[in-house]
Amino acid sequence: MATMMVSVLPDEWMKKHASDPGTKSTFEVALKGTDHLNFMKKQNETELVRPFLSESAWALYSAYHSFLTARLTKAVLLTIPGIDHTEVLSHMNERELVEKSAPPEILALYDNSPYAATEPYLRFLREKMLTEFREFLSGERAGSKAVKDAAHILKAAEKLAERSMVDAQEAKRNA
Image (cartoon, rainbow, N blue to C red):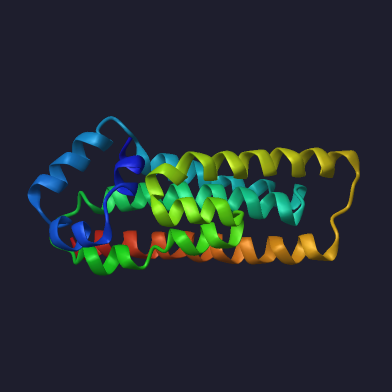
């Protein structure tokens, strides 16, 4: 719920209200009962399977994971008082990841409404991952274009994930 709430908050609203005590309490309630730190830690352990996947499969998984992690990190950051939320949150550019990993119609949907685009984007990534897994397991090999596409997606996913973790750690230290 918290990750979807983050997706409906426009940048202008965030600049104005991110540090408001009401925003903090709303996101504390939304995150109540979740062990988000343990969840993120377990998600990062998936790195252990990387050698067993094709580059394309790993890139798609990374996009999926990074997108959700960035959203969760944004929600968590909104519960931390005393930081420049606008500055910290501005570093997490989900759009760049969507642009590099989704077809134009999903990017257009995202540009219109990140909230409305969330499920189609994640569904697209899941379907592409399943296709990639089937092809990989059947012995089909990806061409050089697929490897290049995977590299672009992976780079954007890693950039978003890294920025999310750095910002979360900095915010925690500054709080």
